[in-house]
Structure formats: C-alpha cells, structure tokens
Length: 171
Image (tube, rainbow, N blue to C red):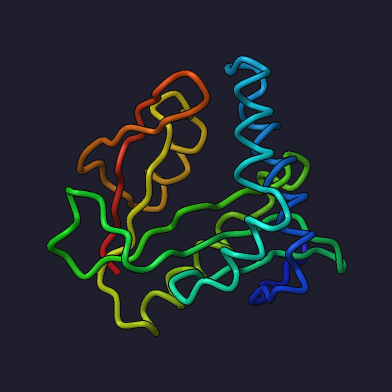
C-alpha cells in the first residue's frame, strides 16, 4: 500500500472525527459494552472536540492516506506526562488509529516514523503512550518497534475504569 503522511489542519476535523469513531469502535466492539463504547466515541471524537484538539498548541495531528483516502491518523500531545515519565523530556503519543482494512500494510509503521521525526524536531528524547492492557495486538506492534513497559495508569471509560500499560521508547 502506497501511504502518504501529512500534518492535519482544522479542515481535516471531520476526517479525524470519522476515523476516530470508526477505528475505536472496530478495535473494541467485541470487548466493550455497547453503551460505554458509544458514549466514549461520541464524547471523544465529536466534531467540536476534534476541532478543539487540533487547535490546541500542545497537539499535533498527522493523517495517513492511501490513494487520496484517509486510512489512519496519529496525535502527539505535549505537556502531558504520566507519573512514570514526568521527570523525562517526553512527548505522548496519545492516539494512533488505523482502519482495519489498512492494518498489516505498514500504515502504522509509517505513522510511527513520522511521530518519531516530529518528536525529535521538537527536541524530545522519549515518546510514551498508554495502551489498554487487553489490547494484545497493539502491545505486540509496540514491542516490535522497541517500546518497553514502564508503568500503568487508569483509564476511565463509561461506568468502568480500565488499566493502560505505559510504554516508552528512547528517541
């Protein structure tokens, strides 16, 4: 798959909103209660929320496209340290979401490479992320890239609280 990565702007808000809702639902519909899942995606990926996040000076969004069609995106967030990286020069990879039909086609790898590049350009030394403890596919992907587990954090989600593993990689 030929993949182009570009930085998103507010004009991409609808694309990112649609990708966020679709990819999050695809990833978790089998494990999660439908009401919690629906509430979460509508709160987290509604158009105004995405616009606000894109306009936040601490956020950087990038979009992966194949043949002019958006197939995934990533979001980097500055000034949001987890306790286990608070004393390090770190930036968070808050989201990396890829459509199911584009998985296994190097889209994630290309998004990650661009995230590393952006983080280095911003003079960060560490990239960290949280991944749900039950998302074994994502954990395997991050492990293959060289991420190491350094902690855990709670992830409130509907009427439950999940556990995210905190992973990091040195840049």
